[in-house]
Structure formats: structure tokens, C-alpha cells
Length: 275
Ligand SMILES: [Zn+2]
Image 1 (cartoon, rainbow, N blue to C red):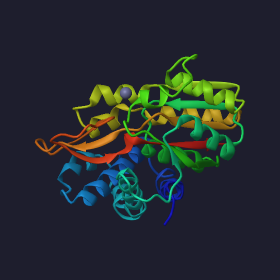
Image 2 (cartoon, helix red, strand yellow):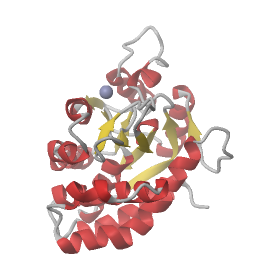
Image 3 (cartoon, rainbow, N blue to C red):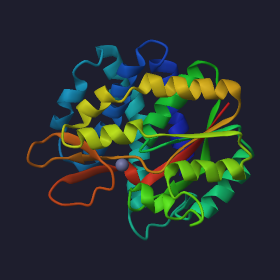
Image 4 (tube, rainbow, N blue to C red):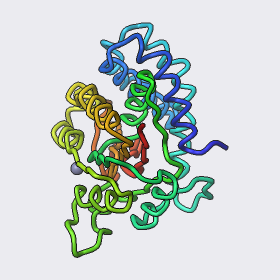
């Protein structure tokens, strides 16, 4: 059984080779989100109707890659995430819910870094796309083996583990990591989280339109040109199917209820070492 970081790299390679060189990054973003949502809907056996708004606007040949080669790489990721979040499931993966322990592991794997960039609510979907974008530019990115499990899908699950003496914020996490990895710079960015909160009930389709994926990718590219960069998030976001409306929307820290939790990516955050 492959580990999460290997599966992410497999999906990244398809995106880097088949999608990024030929299409706008905004369209690639839509197509990759489509593949994740498609795999999750299939996994739950609830039909694919809610995918219609996402499909619209994706160039046909790009959609064909998303439905074919990419879907076959994304499906095992969706299955592994489901498996990991099922309580008591035996795990073949390395994860931590303790911030201190995850930092130790990250330090062991990544060594040092020049810059730490923390993105509030960045999910593995954006990470796959950004890693593919960088790969297509000839820049190496590595998904670390260790990742952080955030069972609440909330920033405070991570930040409350920081020493009480400092700032218990995501910026504080970035600073804490910077001091462990001897990084000269650290920064945090809340743009994705803002969009999750802004568009919670407007749907996944609207959310993707609002997130400026090219801008985020360029920021990370620029940081990597100056030195090794570690990209992380506190949590991703959940993709939820509204039972009433039959549409998809995003939240983080989904608590259950009438709607169907399709993909609980708010509970997982991975680390990317760039450059
Ligand atoms: Zn938030």
C-alpha cells in the first residue's frame, strides 16, 4: 500500500505533465478539484449530478484527462484519507496530532529551510496543483512523509499546542517552525481561509473562482527562488454535499448533520519542501 506522500506525487506528476503545460492554471485548478469531488462522490455512491457546475467551463480535453488518468490517481488518495479518518483503523502512514512531534519529524526530514510559508486552509488539492506548477518550471518539490492530523479541522487545534508564552496563531506556528529550522523568514497567508468562510454556502464552484491559485503559486515560486521553502497549512477544507440542494460546498471543521461529508480534507495537513 502506498503512503499518502507517494499518492500525492503520482497525482502531481499527471497534473505537471498533462495539464499545466497546456492550460491556464485556473482551468487546471477546476479540473483537479473536479477529479477529487468525482472520486469522493463515487466512493460514497451518491451519484455524480452535483458535478455539473464544476464541469462547465473546463476545456473538453482537460476534462477528459481529469476523468481518466487523473481520476485513477486521485481515487486512491480519497480512499486513503477515508481510511485514515476512520477511527481505530490500522495505519500504514506516519502522522501526528502533536505539533511538537510533527515539528521534530519535519526537521528530521526537511533539514533546514530559508523560508516558512503557512497558508490557512490550504488543502492537499492546492498543494498538488502548486507542486505540479513548480515541477513544470523545473523546481523540485517534495511532500514530506510526515503530516499533521487535525481531527477538529480548526486552526486552534494546531495553535493551542504552541507554548503559551508566545503568540497562539498560525503566524506563531510559522515562527516556531522558523526557529526550529533556522529559517530567516516566515509568513502566513489567510486568503484561502477567507474564501472558505465567504463562500461556505455558495458552493465549491464559486469558491474555486474566488481563490487566486496563480497568485499563490507565484508567491511560492518567488520564495523558492530565494532559498528552500517549507509550505504548510493548519487544516484544509471539507467538501460537503448538500442533501437538499444537491450541490457541493466547502467548510472547514464540518460537524456532520443532514449533509454528506464527501471529503474531509480539513483534517489533514501536509508539508511541502520546495527548492
Ligand atoms: Zn477558518
